[in-house]
Image (cartoon, rainbow, N blue to C red; front, side):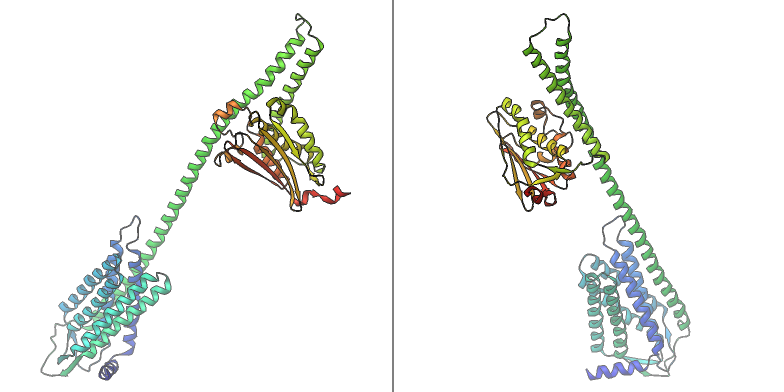
Length: 505
């Protein structure tokens, strides 16, 4: 090992340090550019990976070829030197072909093997370049040092490509390029250490050998090629990135348009269902009003007795009240959409309002043969709310519960005060809903299915309107339901609206 270090020190002393630095810079530039180009290959997309693989092979092959010749130009053996053109071109061809083979293996996910092939290509190219050297001396080679140079080239090449794949960021690529640069320079100096020269003046250098000046021109052209391909790769990358960004935006826009079309179709269908339902809802009370009014105003008909007149008037009043409620629901939804629905907040006696609503719905419960109960604790607090809207919510929910509960069933309203807020729960033993049907019921004009729409009339505004009114008070409306078992609608008002102190006074 000591002999190897001594040989390397001797060889280093025979090189111009300035040209060695230039060779190192060219090597790093070519390795970094090749690694960034190969990193782009093999990626899915509209572009093929072959152009990137070819460009990487050209950059590394030409770059390392230039490095080896610059390093030879830095070699100062104190004798005339020339270079054989055929061997020089052969070295370049070996570098291009072997680098391409190694990179092709890397693209196929055999990174270490591909890196080893690239490292071997660097070592082979070094000896091919040295084979182009012509000088008046006898050459002797140390096969052990040659073997070590190949181990260095192969090992550093495998390590470089492996690191490049595992750390594709800027720092990883720079580190990988440094490793490959060290491998290339290491193979050169180990190769030079393996070569011993014995000067012999009788050996003349042919005059047709390539002068060193032409290698300077070739190396300059190669550097321009490396930089150019690197810039082109960056510009293409930027263009591809812009295209991919545009593609993602177009896909998002197409998805949004698809959803918008779907929503529009759903809204159109809902509107048609609503108009059909409203026409029936409006005609029914109007027909009753017109029918009973016509009987009362007809001068030719026998005047009915007082009891019948009272019955007709009651029917007219009930139909008018129902009609007014329908119109008010539609107007309230329109006000809410326009942001004009405002609360007239005041102190509300919760117990009194609940009892009043239960009393109002009593006749409907009796007619439907459904038991209607309430549970109100004696210490329920007052509520800071719009009394008319609070009453409207309770009546809507009680009406729904009675409407969808069969004969013999029950509906119960419970008030549950706590220090966390006021809770009002309305439970029924009606037809219930599945988990998928609950969001539909909360939509405006939503009807769970056409069969229920025919069996149980309604506009589909009561539940969503109640939800909006509760949220306007800062609370929330929750639904728990099971098909065939029943439904519980819970209103939760925030604690700030519970007036415990005022109630206690």
